[in-house]
Every structure is written in C-alpha cells, then in structure tokens.
Length: 178
Image: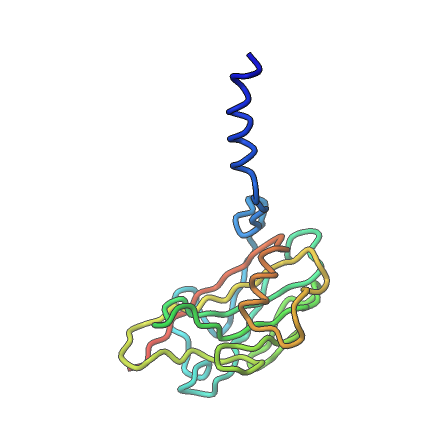
C-alpha cells in the first residue's frame, strides 16, 4: 500500500515547489472607504486635477484603516493607457494616524511616477483616445516603512505594499481629452 501513495506524494510535493504566498489575493484584506470632495466615484475628474488644468492633486479622505495598520501607501494609475498601466502618483510611509490629504497636498514619501517626477501627475490621456479610468488605491500596511529604494518608482511601491496589505480603499475617476 505505501508504494501506491508514493506517486501522489511526489506530485503533491512537486506542485508546491516554488509556491509563494500571494498577498494580492489575500482573503483577509479588509476594505475601507476612500472618498474625495473633488471626485465622485466613477465620475469625470475636474480639469484642475489634470494636465489640462492646474495638475493639482485632489483632496482625499478615508475611514479608519483596519486594526494593526502601521502605515499607508497611496497609488494612482491609469489602466487604460495605450502602452499599459501608467503610474500617476505614489506616496508611501504615510503615518497610520493620517486620515486625509488636502487638494494640492502631498504626504509621506513621494515615488517617481510615469512622467519621471516624484509628485502627483494628473490625468493626461492621448487626445481622442476616449475616457480613461484613474484608480486611487490606498493600502493599509502591516509595516511602518516599505522596503523600497530611495528613488522608488510607483510600481515598486505598489508591489511592496501588496506584500504587506491589511486593507485596501479604492476610488475611481475618469477623464477624457477631446
């Protein structure tokens, strides 16, 4: 009988080789609310927050993050960009006690965006490309500081944040240049 179990044990062992915990699919991630006095969920982003206006970051506020949150990380991206996801903004090592960012404000350490700047870069889709979605994602983290380089790019911040997320709050706005 032991000889019949050996192939099943070997297949199980091989299937688990290299397996890693994927926190992006962590079922224990708590959702909390992210809101803006400048942007309504699913609605167009006002021009003042885009490259066609003042390129000013919108005001954001959020609920109490999950228990155990030690810091926060914020990411804004455009998943509809022609060349793939375009990263507009990243901030990290934000104190867990903070509950808002004022319009035009910055908080925490700023990551390098797709424009090559370490600050907010507003929506700026190609003219005539149709409406794009802009996703604001606020990660509640189980670490006080993310282990990213000093010159971290937004995608590095998000990848590291996903490894440490306890909670996630999201807000989506749209923008179209005609």
